[in-house]
Image (tube, rainbow, N blue to C red; front, side, top):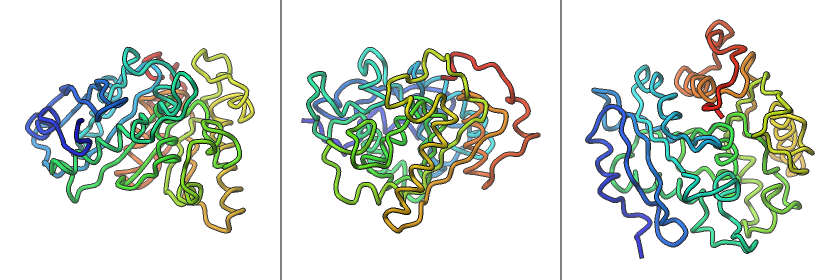
Length: 304
């Protein structure tokens, strides 16, 4: 059986290379033995202890594009980028990726060690075990289906080890509610009793483009649970944040999340990558002038 904490040779080569490159990788054994491609970028001259950003792609499983979306920020701020590709060949459909492979095809609950979310947690741990992440921060960003992936990872496994977590324009959300069964809510998958409080105490950021309002997008989730959250992604982001506020109030605790509504931006993975980088490394949301190159842009399919 593969040692989940042991980084393989390909992963160890990450800090020995520069530019754009891809590494083959496996997250572990059992259901996690399936291959994942790590799309990487390390600018020339970047320090080995520079911050690392893990980037989760959208429905097109285009980790290479999302790696490229982050290259300008990597050059500007001195970052190391790693964008896993969960291919449709090996991680087919919504259940395998967006919903984390928590349920089998027979609707049986998988061991949490084999959830797709655990693959990213294993990657983070292997980066530490290999000495590639030591004292520098490790960040996690996802857009669209990747935003679904990221906020559900945080909801189920927590965000321990990540300096920042941002979900951009998810199609719909797992609500902070212990009554509905996952993926609508947190029930039925054996989460610990403190899972809801842990989630509400996580300083997660939701980025919602205020132009992400297309109700006819074929990739917009349209199952009843999603439609109950609103007619489009922007409305669903507001619904999710309001649900978090209500859940925190019911538990008598502050909500650590932030919702940032991004003016003029639609369902655009490239734009949201730039916005996220500005938030993390400039310490503030960009202003309208900075956002102007992407405002009102027609969404390309590659940005989903």
